[in-house]
Length: 254
Image (tube, rainbow, N blue to C red):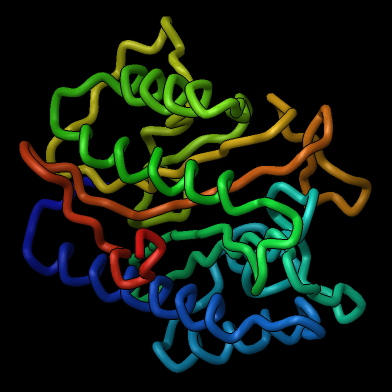
């Protein structure tokens, strides 16, 4: 969407606050031995307290309130009673929701407890790439140039980017134009970021794979060549200067 009046900005701020606070609290709540279903139910309670509704459930009938992916699962992981978290797990939580007609999206990967499996470098690289990308976005900047920046940074640190996942416009629905805000340079993409537009910018930084493929459950995605992936995501408003990070409260840059 494009922000045209103060009430729209306020609506987006409220929806973004709900998803950002939920993500932050879920990351803090996660602990070894807990099931992803229990973690999801905890997040659902927070969203409900805001009066917000789960976006993947509303939009796609997703079998959970939030997406929780663990280990070699890249994204869209289904919360389950029998999926128990372990020390050192690489976990990704993606929280998106609708509140009073406005939609917001955010996500973050983190290492649970001690980094026994050496995932922290991947997580930190993903965070830094998102921070760098956002700081370079403003009205008139080519979308493909931000993708180029993301891939260049990933390669510099020995990682790859997932080519069939990307950020997206958001606001009055979960996925809006501009679609496919990719993590690499598509030389055929001549689009530019527009001032006052609302977009969800996200990283998909991988150790081995360049494509995500769906498992038989119809939701969970893993790498075409295995390995691990980190994702970090903020909903932002594009300006002619520094973007407004609507989901800043989630603390993923801390």
